Length: 253
Image (cartoon, rainbow, N blue to C red; front, top):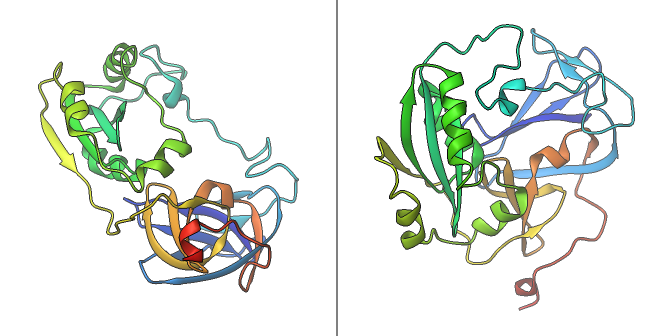
């Protein structure tokens, strides 16, 4: 079997597993309290999933994807000048500011109807919808201008730190003073951590929860944060991880 994809919070929270070339994708739901028992083996390209939901396998060594199965979403790099042959984002777009505890604030863009789902996919703690515009070009221009003051990307490290932190209310309100917010969001992912989890790449343990693409697992008395993208491409077998894992100090109490 191979781990070939994942669904973040907001779009289901699951790991996607294939039994081989041409096999249908199996979806392993990640509900709180579920037990995962995947031992990780070799890692290689995860291939692709066709329109019918079948896996197209690839044994090239690059992971999570080789050069033939890496897709680039040009809209992610757009700043208002379309990078496609023809602009096609003619629908209402939302510009938002998302908060990641304690005080990282990110500007972003999505189609308006998808706003709350997109925020949950990223694992935002708070958010404010600050502009609605008629198309993606205008939205990207606004995003690029706001990104001169706020970040437009949050890496995994700060998101792991945010798992056991609270949003700095004063800093959040200060960040929003320049905007007339259309709507505000305060997200709950269904779990509460007293301490920052240890960052690891494992797929065995009891599911604590999922926040964005971070899977939180309890294993051997320690809580781990796993970036699910780091799991994509691994061959897996049923059975607990055999390698030794870094433990938190609390596990020795």
